[in-house]
Image (tube, one colour):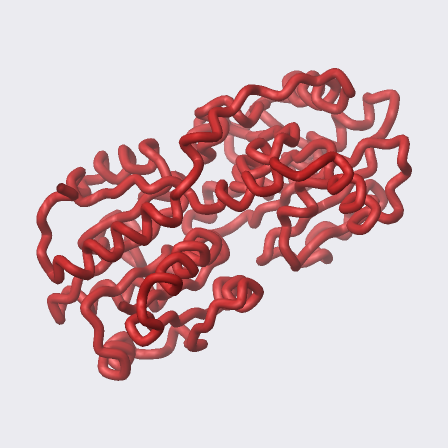
Length: 374
């Protein structure tokens, strides 16, 4: 089996699946190749891989590592090696599986350079995190019987934090936020990039219901500015931490430095999330993970239809605000000590890694057959 990852989202999904497979399969049957932020995440998780870059020929990958199955995460790069591996696998009649970690950008994940053909480089099978994502690909024309809904392994790690005693949070707070006053809550803002597979979807448009300071057209900036506006109305200001996306740089947010108490980047984000009192962001899966940990989680979105981009909004785990008044009310209520968290059914969040690993094993055993999931 050949596995490929490039982006952080794909690596975070596949890393625990690979750990599950390594525990049950001969190491010789697994060949993991990675580049970009995906490679950095695999390295931090102690997963062995071969570094590659997107200039490598897909045919060379298969010649160097003969296989019966290729599994590729999706990437924001339309020229990613992952799509080339899927195409080459089809030419060689090798089974291919695509990993889709969430519903955002369904139109573009397998389009490549042909933006008007959403399934131009589609694999034989899909592993998706939830039914919402499955429906999106079925609507695009992907065969319903070749999509496996396996859940998201990230929730399994978050569940581990939910079982820690209160003293663990206190220790993490002191370690990760040493300058935070003990009498002020910590608000952690989870940043996102304002480009990607569909750059126009991440900049100001006429259907925006949030406006920020009016000085930036970047989606994340506008949301961040709305959060600052709302926080400035509160009687007590929280200690404000900006958690940078792996593809962000601190200099991107230099104009806001006077309103940011601390920047956070690198290392494992889950302890940072767990130690905070409120997690605010857009559609990062860290908002879902925060809710699973038992932390108040708020998604602030400039367009109502973006709600479908985050599973936790659909399930009610994550509160959502799409205009200035909703942002003001949500932040005021959620930073209050008496705020009550929404109930979450944790039973359905377990075993995603094993479920995805079992599906991959079945596809390996079936070879190039394109039968239904049954």
